[in-house]
Image (cartoon, rainbow, N blue to C red; front, top):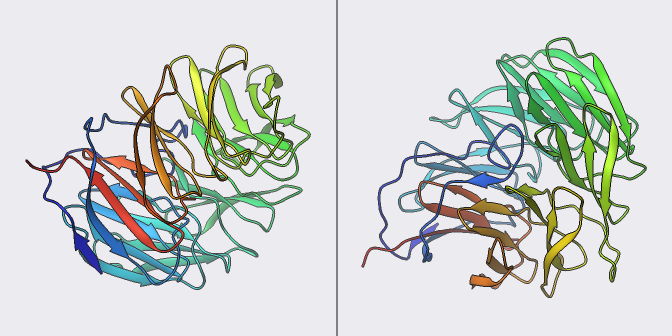
Length: 357
């Protein structure tokens, strides 16, 4: 069910992956300065999944076990697809197919136009990781402790066994997948062969997805740190800790020009200098921040379990805009076509943009 709140303009880009690009950097096109709620789409149970936006369609999974396709223009339902169990993973879209895993360990390939299944693949445990792509191959992790690489028809190209849950999404750069998990290692894998090129010991569970830029991977850990890893040298460059409150980081980092942004279970949003891991600013909310920030122009957008969606100035950390949904936000914002889309734990999918005067 969709409630149209305002009319809005025409659009032209997309957000087809968790974090917006294969490197998982959390960067998006510039949004209008003033955002208004344009429509609201409601589902039966909560939404922890981030959305994908492609060709004017929003794709989102929900805890009712359904994958929804909703018109970006007005929030009307185009189709829904019933998975095997609840969906926490964010959908990924490539070449007309939507890919998503569920809590039963079933990975689904769904036709983006019709909502019909193309094929399914069964892992041995829950899939929270979202899919990433390299050429015709599809990569994702599972709580069965494997990182999978599938061919476009759903057959296994290779799989890598780890020592813990693979909760986060693998980053893909120049034919190499970078995957961190709950065994405390960051792995580099040649996607064409499945050969492990490197393991970097982090000494910490990692539930977040690595964000990669200029040969360095950045991620939060369950040992209350955000770390930077030099991928060529195979070593940790620096580790950031909140000096006042030590809590884990499940949020995945967004990478700006000279700083990263990440949410923490210390109830704060942090801006950290890329060069050396020093704190530039932080903002304390009133609840955990598991939502992953997204950079758009001079702002960074992120949700909190308070139900508030924030827009911070990148440089100062000043709150330039906020909206209270009245329900917790665990999902990551999806930004495309001059719109921001995010779901709540009560099952409301919001679309924000510039309303027509």
